[in-house]
Image (tube, rainbow, N blue to C red; front, side, top):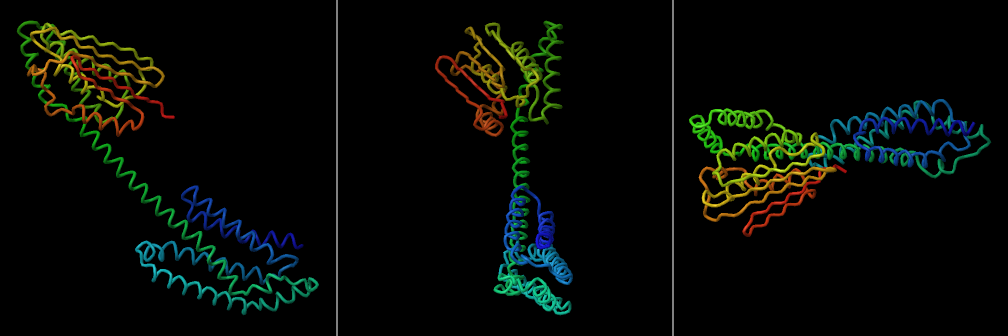
Length: 374
């Protein structure tokens, strides 16, 4: 029967610990703490009932102990820890906790007296051929109860602190995410209104010279405005949408360009449904038109976008005409700019992008982004 008693004794404490783990089970770390406590309790409790068939009143007393521990856990979780421990009132917290533990020991001792537990245990020892448990002889009841209280409170406090730490961490992450989204939205929304005013002036002039082209320009401008009004709330969208936006923008800029400006836009996208940060390439294209256009000289502009196997390669190339910035293309005085684009790249693709900008007779931009999430 000793094996059965061992199992029952351990089952009691496993049930207690399972309740504690459920009360504080907010993460895998808490589970590990609970498992560690279970192991300690198994180690401590096996010798206490070894070779004995314990009386019924022993289990009644264990139930009382169980209920007292549950009360202690509930009191600590719902009142003591939030009111004192979290407020850094450590002296009051541990003082009250010690008083509660002493009260528990007293109540459990009174329960044992009322149940005649000591006499019943002695009878059980005699009935089992005086196979007294040496652990039970050497470890006092008070020390045993206090030890169990410390173990249970230890895992309880650990669980409470872990839960609080996780809650604070989640709040910090949410605040950082909200801040990041606000910053990205602000950066994206800074496309200068001068672009629209200048484009509208261009369209107005086209209505007198080329009605068909002016209609196309209005359509392109409508695509851009629709993108800015309805798609800007999304941090990312598909490459197909991004290419549509870039095409509309480049076509409008070409309409505003002098005759000497030529634009080559190369696209090679194997995965058009792959997502990219919206308008991440726009500042570099704006820069090409702002600094690479001259009414007196040939002004070739090259734009390329290639996407293959989650690797994005974007590049621009244009001549540099110092001190020759056509007012028609000076839309970026208050635009998002290349510096802000660097900031967006750092926020959205940390350690997953490279940006190379060289400026001699030509202005070259090479941007690579790894979209693989592994």
